[in-house]
Every structure is written in structure tokens, then in C-alpha cells.
Length: 147
Image (cartoon, rainbow, N blue to C red; front, side):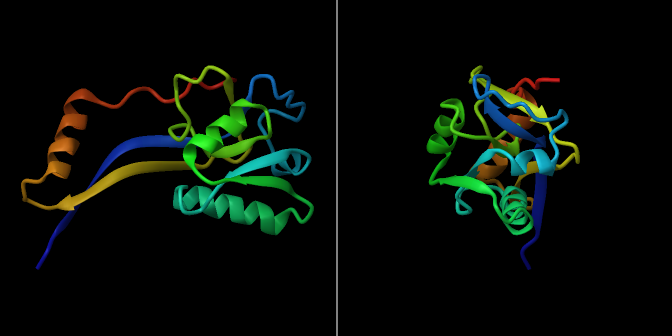
């Protein structure tokens, strides 16, 4: 039979993400009630992580009058956030860490996630080579967080 191996590459934490010029006036850490008063930017479910998709779905289900727009891809998502069109809810490794226009605000209820890679166990493959490279060199730091 085939045996698979999972290697975790990166840990992350979810934040409310917005432009530094957005003017968020709610509480810190950010509550779901705060989000209900804001315009949210969601990422299309074919692009986002399952945990982000579940969080977006629960917000639309639990907050009946929610004002939100959906970005079709990662580039549009980050540009909409940077332009101050709303607040996104995503892991710190989703947005570009070199984008200093964005502010990451901690959520009241901490939500974490991880990115990893599944490879065939005990087989040489480009994916296994990549995992070994990441283990040697590490991944770049995620976005700085506003306290």
C-alpha cells in the first residue's frame, strides 16, 4: 500500500486585517460584534484555507446584516484590503509580510492554523526535496502584528 507522510511547514494565527488608513474604531482584541459593524472582505472559497472558509461562512450565517465583498483571488484580496475597502479575516501567513500598508489586529477568540505538505513516505520526490529545503532554510517571517 501507499504510505503518506505529513510535514508541518508553518504555524499561523488568524487576525482581522485592514489598511493602516482604514480607520478601524472597534475594540482590541476584535470581537465578532465589532466585525458586524464593518465592511468585510472575504476571499473566494476556492482560494482560501478550509479554516478561513469556515470562519467566513460562520460570519455570514451568524451576523444576518453583514456587509461584505468577495475577492476572486489572492491578489485582489490583498489589494482590496490595502485600498481600505474593508477588513479581512485571515491567517498571518496569507498576506504578504512585506506589505507595510496592512495592520493585523488580534481576534478576541484566538484561531490558529498551519500549512504543511503531504508526500509519499520513503520516496524521493520534488515535494520531499522542497520539505527538506524548508527544514534547512526555514520560511520567511510572517507579517508583523499590531498589539
